[in-house]
Amino acid sequence: MTLEQLRIFAAVAEREHMTRAAAALNLTQAAVSAAIAALEQQSGTRLFDRVGRNIALTPAGRLFLPQARAVLASAQAAKAVLDDIAGLRRGVLRLHASQTIASYFLPAIMAEFRLQHPNIALELAIGNTAQVERAVREGAAELGFVEGPLSAADLAVEPVAVEEMGIFVSRLHPWADGRALTPADLGGATWVFREKGSGTREALISALAALGLDGAALNIALTLPSNEAVREAVIAGVGAACLSPLVCARAEHAGALTRATFALPVRHFFAVRHKERYFAQAAQAFLAAVKLAPADHGA
Image (cartoon, rainbow, N blue to C red; front, side):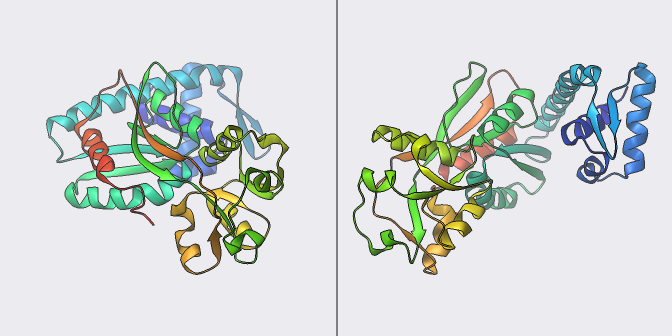
């Protein structure tokens, strides 16, 4: 059993599709299929069921997956130690972040970091808060960044930036005239929301709860999976949305969106790392760079 086989197994298990796993790993489908077949033959255990063109983990495969992830994380941690011996002259830093942070806050920081440390490769994956937490816990990421606090004994969580969320509407919406809104206005509006588990959605639900409003009672016209989809639906006139100013800056500047007059509480961006895993120099340096960046630098 090799680390490459485990890496391929984990990629196939996460995607439940040979072709997509092969593309993600930059391998041929034949190489991926051969690795899975060899692993099953070596273990004498069927790890996947073939269902039409798709595959699914068998009970044995589901039991094996967390063990495979743990071995891969340990191998990556060992490599990080060796990379640290060379200081910041080489290495790979794996990051996971929620949508707003990954799309608007981190890219400029990553670009500057690469200029300072050109031999440190940066890999960024996007997920919701729960997915980022799992990636850090399982060792798939050295650092995670989320838009809401986490409470986990094995994770170190610290605020790194602050932003004030906004309520945005199209230029033809009644709220675009700049009137001061009341909680009753918010309760009677039509909304476009992100999916459950989104930090942006939770920020609005928490703010409304503080005003005595039940988020579940709102008229939610659309629930969409990305900030950009929500923004475009608002521009199209579907309703109002709570979004990061980073997401709306260009559309607001172009006159397609207007920020309604209602103050929402600030929210923090948090960095997350595992307390018991090796904290590599590259991760330390990147976290320091993040703390120096203003929250609106990506706007």
